[in-house]
Length: 121
Image 1: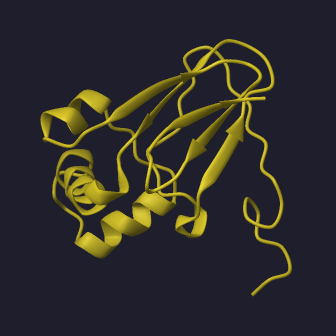
Image 2 (image 1 turned 120 degrees about the horizontal axis):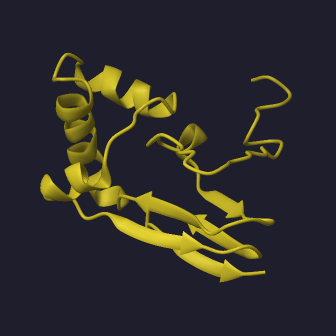
């Protein structure tokens, strides 16, 4: 294993702007994620409970890529952070989708047991 794994052994910093988005993805090495919003406008998060991971992968495979991927490829693509998909498509497929608004000075804790939690600084 390399000495440094970005996002795991060292922090990652992302910047955003009006109308920017971040693709659906599985967290690095399927670990938990703790995110802090330093400043700016509120950020909207969407998450799927871990119990629905396989169903979500099927939605990604079918609706995001037209069913042209096998199951392992769908999981791999979710790790690459390249999958845009409307939350409405997820909910229409019968998968619960958590929506959370994060304000500056707040942490968001994403874990498999509880999809979204806000923790004030």
